[in-house]
Amino acid sequence: MNDFILYLPDFARALGVTLAISLSAALIGACGGFILQAVGSLSRWLFWPWRAYVWLIRGTPYLAQLAVFYFGLPAVGITLSAVEATVISLAIYSSAYFGEIFRTAWQSIGRGQLEAAQVHDISAWQSFWHIQAPQALRFSLPLLGNQFILTIKESAVASIITVPELTMTTGQIVASTYTYIVPYTLLILSYWLLAQGVSVGVRLLGRQATEG
Image (tube, rainbow, N blue to C red; front, side, top):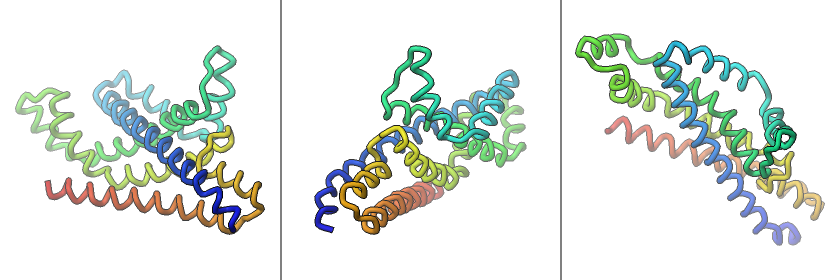
């Protein structure tokens, strides 16, 4: 137990790495999913490429996608650090899921509102920004929070390519101290607290959006 306490600073740094990777990937993925869904919904020519992208990303495991970025890209002259490969691949992976969330939110908007906008000569882009987007964001907040939590948990896969995040650091601590219960219990508790923090934040945002 005393040996484990000596590693607590390392564990705290790993928690920071997990947060940084997850937050960066989730923000990029959410923005990417939002933009792709918006463009796909406004252009018939881009709808099917967008759907193909979603099918490809969602139909393959994240570990395989991470391996392509970290081990495969150097073959074509592109070398990424372990953290860079993780953030980029996790952002691309999550963007497909975020995009599906936004698509569901789009479909929840009544056609009557869009038809009324057309009657009043409101352009497709104006209708998108002033009618569809605000409602879609409010509707999708709980689902976005759930996807953010999944992104945090998926970040553990980065331990495979030696990113010093929570899971890898915990494994190193276990290997050094031969202590299992305390490190892994703290690991589970850390992920649980991160998930609860996201859930509370989403509820607060949802409350503000409703009151606003």
